[in-house]
Amino acid sequence: MNLSEGQYDRGIGEVQDAGAALALLRSRYPELPFSLAGFSFGSRIILKLGCETASVSSLIAVGFPANLSDSQSLGQCAVPKVFIVSRIDQFCAVQAMDAYFGTLPEPKQLIWVDATDHFFSGALDQFEAVVYGIAQTLS
Image 1 (cartoon, one colour):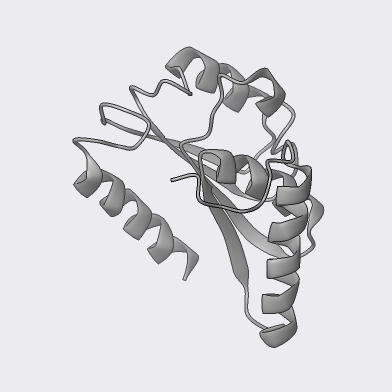
Image 2 (cartoon, helix red, strand yellow):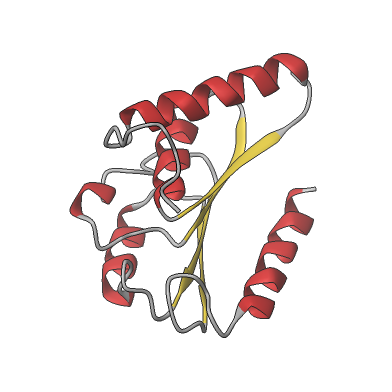
């Protein structure tokens, strides 16, 4: 872990990097519909990028760190959003997620997974089934 040669840029550079990757893919496949998905810090990145990018079909935020106060401004757009969160998550207390989710505009969906930590321990099968179900509705 922590083998990246890059430096943490408080989400600014990371959104730019994700945007550059998305632009490359969109240039190669401009007609395909697309969604953005991210886990933990990556969920913050896709919520920022997805709300600033035209023609995004949906945003899938997994393990969103709702406990962080600077997460509260993310996802405030009309793009359909799905949040998949562990019921026991050191970065996303149930009360913090419920409060944050209540501020978001529709369409939105919140799915709780009965896992024991941020990484969905003890519930990977349930997590996989949730992701599979979401993928089926998007295709």
